[in-house]
Image (cartoon, rainbow, N blue to C red; front, top):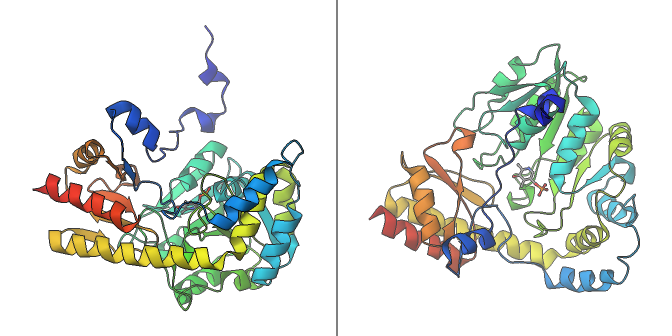
Length: 365
Ligand SMILES: *Cc1c(COP(=O)(O)O)cnc(C)c1O
């Protein structure tokens, strides 16, 4: 009897596939309804910036050719903008690709990988895929408990994931707390600081994480174009690290992991300050709108530094998620993150947030 599972690598066999937010088209098919509002994947509600759209049009004519495998222009732009050397950069098909690449480059089945309870699901996923042992450290007030994470380091620990802000909780670590933690992690343990939501954090609160990379060679910072830059569907992300780490990761990387469209879009998005500022402003306003609703409805929420709010809706969260679907509103259940009483809602345009609020008021009675 053919048994594919017997042939598969140990780590893959028991892997639960990543649960993405429900696509609008899928709900349309299932319920036969239109006008669906998706607040499930922390996407940018502004849609594609017009500058990026124009650049993509121009790029189409070159698509018969392979992309630039080294992403020369994007790396140069990133380096210039953030005062880095191109040799410190590793580009990815979204930062998810880079997170996996770090794990594949440095971790094997003998190792332990530390992350926080309620942290981004990709961390346990890539750890398990490699067959390494994941150590989930209990959260403190829904966020990373850095002291306990430090205490969890053993001589088998090869890597620690820290998301700041974290998804799906939106919790945030101060610069001081983070630097104190990083300075105490032994040099042979890599720290992946995932800053997917960094642009939504007030500038004076943001950690000088790229500067830290020069000071702490075991620190790898990842960023993405999927959130504040609005390019989730194109897949563009990157890591900033010590050049020796980048060199190793670039050996294992698929040569064309960023395609011609995503490379060009990211280059243009990086310069599109107006779009970025608008993203942040729309997010701040939407956050206020959702918080005002929670307070008026007497619902607890986890204070968030990202583009989403995780709301404690109670024991019937799974049922409420389904009921919201029938109202044409897609949010994200987070029971898989050990948050069975919560739902995560991405910040949308004012009218999208309003559609969620209206549906909630109707369902909560
Ligand atoms: C959305 C997200 C990412 C980015 O994913 P991409 O692959 O870049 O689209 C990375 N980390 C966290 C914590 C996220 O929420």
